[in-house]
Length: 94
Image (cartoon, rainbow, N blue to C red; front, side, top):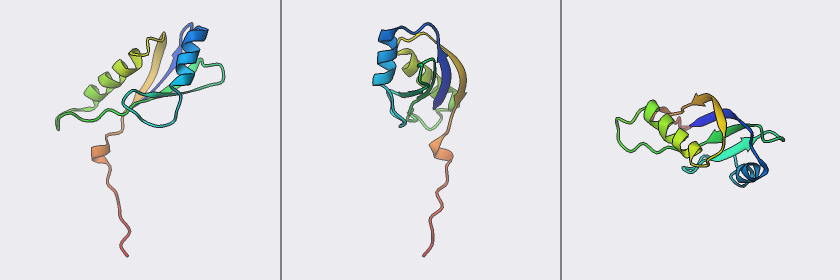
């Protein structure tokens, strides 16, 4: 899951929280990348499928809950889902 958004009235303590959770990887807790002023962000979150019937809506809700857990005032601009179950890996034949 990738959530793009902007912070609304983030104070210095909030900026410190974002900087501490910075990273480009996908984790279940989530990581942030942000601009220099910490006003816009990309939140990356790994959401393991609990059941075979879990869909993109379930994953989006879980990722938004992970973002909300940080307790930072924000506005979500875009949510993108990549379901790893749909990705095919082509192996080189030797």
